[in-house]
Image 1: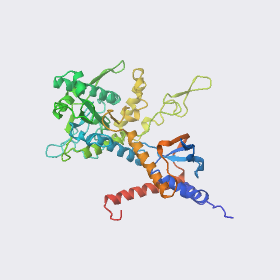
Image 2: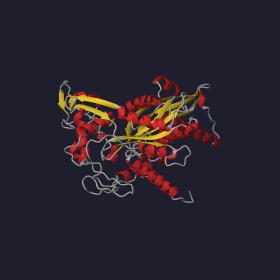
Image 3: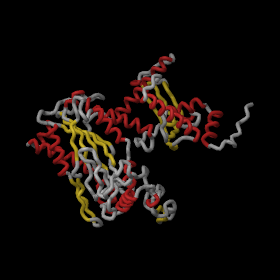
Image 4: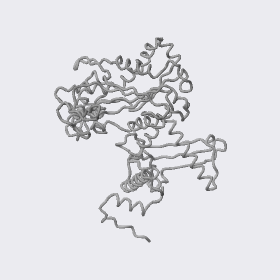
Length: 486
């Protein structure tokens, strides 16, 4: 009889757990399940079952139970789009976003290839100024000009984007602008159509019957902690991408309409505590034409790659944290209901409602002040619907990082369906090679029941996942270097 290993001398918990997995479980299956996650940093642990039957013969085609796994659970990818949380899953999200944007520029994915001949623009909309900040300006020759503080900042200077005078900087206006940026974008799209009709001398109804404006946009944080938007805007015919726009729908008309919409799109915020604030776009905006021939500065691939890059980023670029600051037991209220129904001080946060004290966050003074301002504004009754305390770590921004109009191109869900169908086809091909009967997906009926257990790896699985991530990175490095054996 094989004696169990004495692992008491093994200091590393991960190594100890890995040895136990290798000796007491089906280690090949453990390794296979981790490798299928492709380096996901925080997989979802599920417990349940799935049964697939043929609707005609009622025969069970496939069945699966998580209890049959060596660990008794199924690991699936977290699917998080943020690169700071899961680089592996964010790469998949970025790839999907790239194909979604590019399909709307050059066709494919059920989008007509003639869209590349439609007027298309890459538009950048920025936030207004809430006070002078440290910057790094250059002249026409590329020579660096001095900042308002008199210094010549380097590109990686942490002072860039921070106020020259924090005491006079409008932190309240900055946070409220972030909080309303999504609504301001919606107002902009409305005024864009109105401005276009005005510029062309048409009624709104006549414009809508002859032209459709499609778009896709992504939000990006500036160093000063404010979001700005990059958008692809395209003119289509009345039936969408399958029909060409009218001859009078030109890039020049789009450029004029964007300028008018930027000037007119405004929101008014009123509060007894801060008075009246007008939320509007900054004076600086860009409207660049996307090259139809692929030989210009802004090509389809470049624009799609640019948008996809920012679709996986959060607010970390501005120096903030990538996690919510609300105390989970009390949900940020600072109190919990006791058995007697009365409010009791939350022991976890000592009544602050914060999972981490704002003063202790490892961030710059400027970012900390924006977080504190968002937290304080969020607890005012007139701003309760904004839930700024919940989005304080995002410096007040609570909108979608990427969005598109319905008719722009395909959807992320459709791209995931295509990937799922491809995996099914690969599995069926493997069954055929093994001499097993294949199935027609249209005749299958699946029943399942799943329960969420937790997130993350066991210590030993984490070591395996680290090796997977190393192998993937090494393979990509060799491909980029043009290794002949790959």
